[in-house]
Length: 123
Image (cartoon, rainbow, N blue to C red; front, side, top):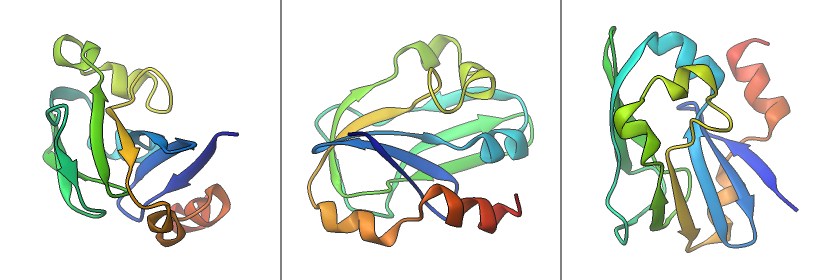
């Protein structure tokens, strides 16, 4: 069963077993405006929860992306290198950033469910 969690910094993680797919929320995508460049992490690198992992640049600003959970990068979305606007078009599916092997599922307890995230952004 896939579960989705959110950070206060507007990242999401879809968890299936010990694997997680990470991206930014539609709210974050809207706030950034037109995304023009994405710097993704290298495969094989490990990160602690809350550490900066990637950078998204838009016409408005550059924003660091923080890891929602501790883990090792197992895949990145190569399509974003040539077409970063995919994040604007479909931030919850085709616009995913990277996949991680989650090192500590306890990290997920620090994240929000969809209802709590919607309260955060005032939906």
